[in-house]
Length: 152
Figure 1 (cartoon, rainbow, N blue to C red):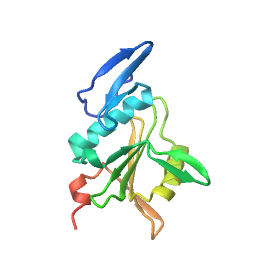
Figure 2 (spheres, helix red, strand yellow):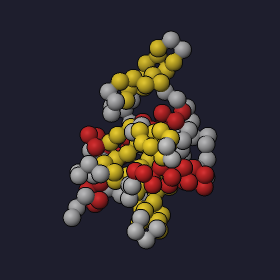
Figure 3 (tube, rainbow, N blue to C red):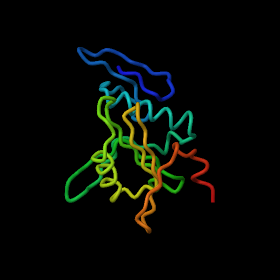
Figure 4 (cartoon, one colour):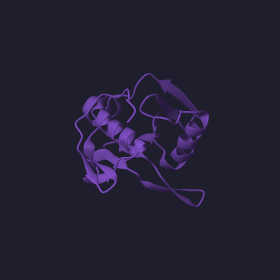
C-alpha cells in the first residue's frame, strides 16, 4: 500500500483466500482491502480520533438518488440532528484529486446537502465549506473539529 499522509491507526487485517480483508469499525465486519478502502478506513479513524466526529454519526456508502440513478457516497458525517454535515469522497492514492473529482462530489452533494465537502486520495486532501444559499464555497485549511460545527 502507498504511504498516506493521514495519521496511522490501529487496524486489523486478515487473509480470506486471495483477498486481504480489513475490519471496518462502522460496518462491524471485514471488508475487502482495496486501495480506496485503505483511504476510507484512514479517513474514518482520522475523523473519530483526531477531529472528534462521533462514530455513531458516520455513515459509509449511503445510497442516494441523483438524476434517477442510484449512487453511493463514500462517507457522510451527520450532525447531532441527524442531518448531513460532511460529505467525504475517497479515491485510491494513485487517482489525483482533479476538477472532475470535485464535480462528482459537488453533484452528489446536491442531493445530500452537506455544508462541508472533503475530497481525499489519502495523499492530497481538499476541504470546502459550501454555502448553498449564496452558491459559493470556501476552501478550508483542515477538516473542522466536530465540536466547532455543532455549537449553537
